[in-house]
Image (cartoon, rainbow, N blue to C red; front, side, top):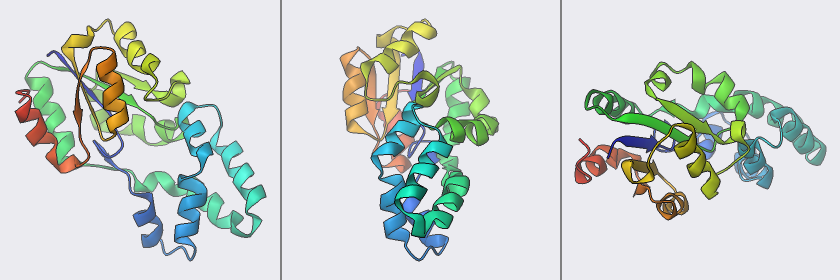
Length: 197
């Protein structure tokens, strides 16, 4: 194994939008969570086929009584993304052991530009496939194939880590190994099991 490939959300970054809405004391927190974060159009933001502005405008037209909250949330939601420090620390360990590090993540372009590429630890990666930049989204096999092609990697030398079982099944279809990580506190334990660290 030469290459460790990470998902971001719930693996390296916390992503709990409902908790965040509750902490911000939104009166309609459950409703706003459903309207915004569970909206089918949210996937199109990940795909890069709709902009944040287009998404916000559409929701404002559908829910005019919540327009002010929707505008604020769409401006501020990246606040809920926090590096999972224990897992971020493992990146340096992996680099020291000689592994190349990559990302395949379903991530909004706006969030990537405003948040992700400004994170110091993001420079530890040798390459990244961000869904909204590529107009591809996991678990489409093409997104995994793009990683291999762009960075000249062999599938059987790559280990992919994701909180979604569907995404792990997809990576295995093209010959990568995978770790399904529904609990991000177990990343170090799983890497030890796979004799990576």
